[in-house]
Length: 327
Image (cartoon, rainbow, N blue to C red; front, side):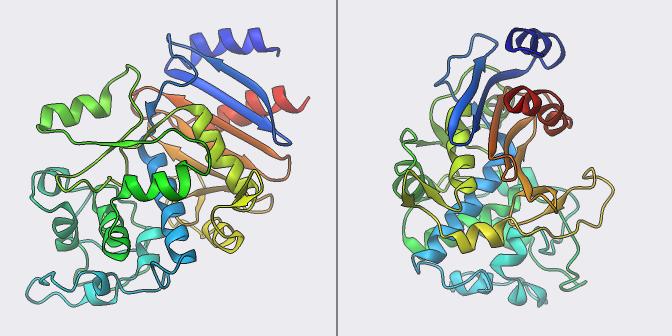
């Protein structure tokens, strides 16, 4: 399949794709756009945001702002008042959050309760813990990961987007990002499901803390830069941005005891596709993906507008894009 055939295939069979950028051996080998998007337009990358916050936590640990991923979550919130009778929350660590092994007193994501509260971090902490204790069960959450942004702020006195701009985006030559706060539930929904290009923004809570589970807007080119840095063991253009030790730990596969995740394993907010080949990805709803294949020295980034339950995007990359750029 050549590039023109791929373009037409995507237009008909993957119609919500807006941009694709692919690198091999450090060189850009493929780039294209659809749906009237330009190369520097941003999309809401949905849950791929989680993988970015994992990098920020790693940077904070490298710099000594956070001591360790084994730190207890509550150590960072001395003013938070634990609910009466709650004991488990005292033992929850940052690592539990990063690996989706933290226990919660809720089924699914408590969107309305967290996002209508005055303090999204404390509201998320209210759901952390429970009578079952630390079961080490994989429990995929989005909104309550706001605790990680709270930890980052408590440790650095910097808001999520400011920390990202200084220590991650600027070194990667990614455009400066700004906070975006939705005043109403309608604005929140419009941001999430909108199909038009976004600005370089990070959705935030009323206090300006970026949502770590979703909400970051980037172009495929910028997503690819994230992938290239990870492929380079934390280095980009000769500069070490995050330690190689963190990249190794972040992408170390942990089994997922569930049939709902297509046999994938999990690292620190990154999905591991192939344990033997160490292929890993950031994945967001609607098919937003940063795909990293160290064996073939490949990074592929796909940016897409909102279309719920797109589950085949990694398969699509492996079936169509990877062969195109390697043959």
